[in-house]
Image: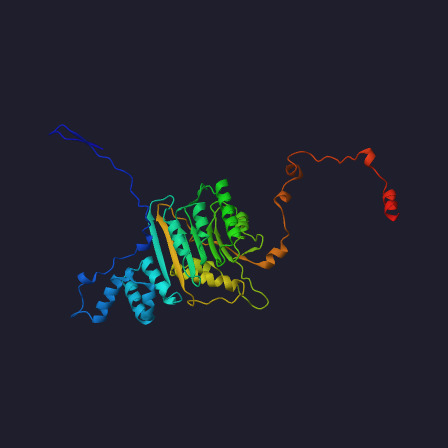
Length: 387
C-alpha cells in the first residue's frame, strides 16, 4: 500500500511479510493461564494469606526447576498439594506435568487433558516433537491422542508408531493428503499412505496397546480402511466417518458392524453397548470419552477390563484453528473385531472379483495343445509303475 505525503512529496510503501514461526517447539510450555508471581500476588480476602498458601505459590512458581529424584522425598502428600495448586490456577504445562509424572509414575491423580493449538492450516512442525516426547513416557500408563483439523501426512503417522503407550487414537483431520473432502473421492496417494502406515506398524510391531481408533476416511472405501487397520495387533474398536459410503455399512473381514438400530442380544441376555451413545454426548470431556470407549472395547469382547479411573492416563488434543472442521458429531459407523466373523467369511483375492478376460489382461482363454510325441496312453503309464 502506497501513501503520498503532500508536504514532502515522498511516497511511502508499506509491505507486510509472512508470519514468522519458530523452529523451536514451544508446546511443552503452553498453558491456559500464566503462573501466579508470588512477589506480585495480592490477597483478595480478609487479612493476610496463610503461610501454607504462600509456600504453595512459591513452589508452583518454581515447579519447572524441580528435580524428580528430589520430589520423590516430599511424597505425594506434599507434592500433591503443589500439583493441585498448579491445576487450580490452570498454569499446568506439559513440562511441569512430566516432572511430577517421573517422580510418581503410577499416581492416578496426575491424569490430565492437554489441549495444544496452532494458528492456520498446513503441516505441523511440532507434531514430531510431541510424538517423540510421548514415546518417552512410562510404559505403565495409557496415552490418548486426538488430532483435529490439520493436513495429515505419512511422516507424522510413522512418527506416531514410536508411542508405545498409545491406547486410543482419534484422527479428526481436515484432509488426508490430497483426498477431496467434498466429492468423497480418495486419491491414490491417500490410499497408499494408509497402507504404508499399516505396513510400518506390522514391521515394527507397534501399537501393542492401541484398542480404539476413530478415523475420518474422506473417500477411502471402508473395506480398504478395515483391511489396513487389521495390521494393528490389539485394535478392537474402530469408528469410521464417511458420509459418501453409507452403502458399505456391513461387516468386512473380521470386523463386525455394530448396528445401532438393532438390539443385539444373545442367549445369555448380553446386550451389546452402543459406542455412539458415548461419542455423541456433549457433557463429557475428550478424556472421559476416551476412557469410556477404551473400557467399552473390553466389554464388547466380554473381556475383563481395567475399570475406570484405575490407571494413569494422559490425553493430548492437538489441532489448528480453521474455517472447516470435520463433522464427527452426527455419529460414526463402529466396527468391532470379532474372531468368529473371520471364520464365516471365505478368503478372497482381488482377482476373484474380476471377469476372466480382465484377469488375463483382456485376452480370451485358449485351449491347451499337446504335442504328438508327448501323448501317452494311461495304460502304458500304469504298466510302467507295476513293472
